Length: 491
Image (tube, rainbow, N blue to C red):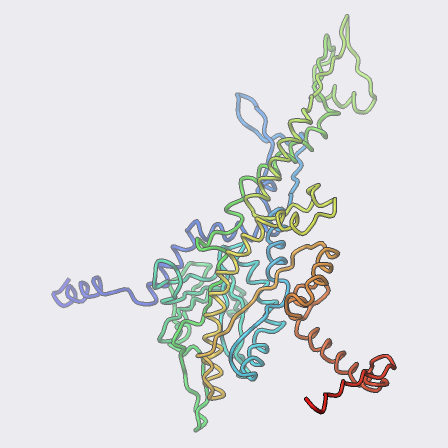
């Protein structure tokens, strides 16, 4: 090696990593991490692809070797606890439209209602499922082909965030990798696209997954989005923030399956073993005395087909049956089920406590764990919506020239809790004159949209006023009003 080559080698060796090298290192580390493994597990368990599906039964073979027992029952019963709990949390907190309140002007409120309407509600619901299954969900902000500010959900297993702080509240960069199918001549193959997003823009590389190749440039540095200036030229622009918003299940970014996997696996295993025992009962252990045959398999076939067995001398057949301790099994399964709902912070709808029309206080007690989990989720999602609002305010400032960032905006989650309707209606009726009509309407179980209901009430009252005014003496029932007493002239 010449002196010049040695200098160049040392410079390259001690130089900081490039964005391409950082992306390659981080993606490789992420794919080998427990976090990535739990994400795949969470998605699988939500689809009822649990550990029990890989279960095998074994026996002892020749020489004491462990071999698979293919002649024994091997039921694989999947119990969808993860799916039920994820859907329960999603339905409880994210199934009803969120309410938006602001001290800004009406046109700002209308813009917010447009951005966070029904389409966004569906995205928020799916973001919740992603967060519960993966520990964190991701929403990307982008401009559509028609120039509209839009949002799309990015699979969590495709995102490698680089955080500025240890609390994971602000992004320094985002690495995203995802597969695409391409055709080279007559060959179809899958390659990975790797994107590196930071405050300067986005770079893209391509990797051939069939040979695990190096990252090859796919696109040069581009902006976060493009815009056409007054001269008709396309400009590449960047946001002041990375346009990816995290929606966390909890501060630790821990998926639900990481908390419940061992309990769910044991429940599936015990249920399957019990089914195996019931199925194996007809094939109980036979004790055969003085059997004149030699092949045990032939004996079993004869017994199954002819229901007879020939023995010699003083021979006979005894049966060793398997005794199932149903009480112990039932107690264990009940404790497992209770633990799953307790540590999963859900509501067991099969509980006998639901069968007696419980009062509002009793229902709130039953929903206590779910409500506590919803509080934690709402805190995380509120912070995420505040980050998303920043992009909406920037967009409105760029397109309308109005800066709405100074106004306060509150996102109110409306939870879908089971209630005792009769009790709720009675309480609402008894509260008239004590609290405002808006509060009463908001808590009435039959009301789906508070503002629409208030508008209908106002309209009904305004239509009823002319009817009262047309009645004799202003609607006093036909009796003239009492004349006012005349004052004494001397006084």
